[in-house]
Image (cartoon, rainbow, N blue to C red):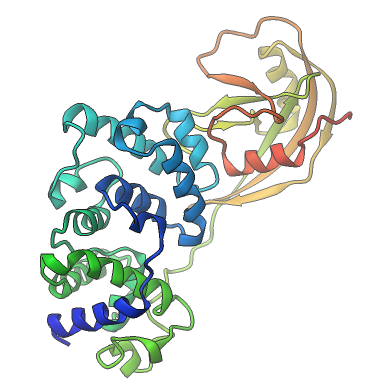
Length: 353
């Protein structure tokens, strides 16, 4: 297919079958498109819907996000994962207010230079909200083009990515069609050209799709090479005071669960007396809780939680780590790591040990 026939086929299909009621498709603005695209990175649409609505209720525009507290941003992000996205949202909002006059740059290069915005996200913002001609290559589009061109290597390699970007650039129509085309390509990948069981018979590109013509649509794209995830273990402590509140500590801004509040951790439970001493707490009982595991992109974490009843005996050692006694009945607006949130919910009522 030529660029014209390719884009015409996609746009004609989308006019009848494309998604038109997603919340970020209403009142389109660079801000709303930006937030939605960041949320949708490595996250499915159905998961994002509720988060986007709640985020927009609290932070309806760029100035409100820039003026907001990072803790509240992370609180609204709790459960979405990849929390660096939320930190970069807040950082970029403040940068746009302080250095760009509250306006988004109107170029791919300018957008891609902002924290957390890569080339594809910049293309989506530019095309959907600014009407600029800009190719994108998110996960859905990458899958469509990998099948369409019968790419025979894993799309995540540098060489494959360059090849797919070149194809995306060649097939993207002129600026006046950019917004509709960008959304149409994302819809095509999300609804027809899915990871498993692609609906090739309904696809507008079936006559030119090389994977279909070769009978390889179920084998392409080439999956990521499998690797064995390293295993790590940690003890998480629910230090519960007589009022039923649980001690949480804020993690460093960088690294795992950066900026979120989490439970104190130990390599093993035998280190508990030393920790309690540093916190000026005494133990009146403890109970092992059921273990749980959490898988990250690069390792699997096995969590061994303990519920420890503790009382404050004095002033804790001076520490630069922010901490809070978390009230589970009236929780503060702070960001929580998903396993921590799960543990707090599982122990929602104070219990004797």
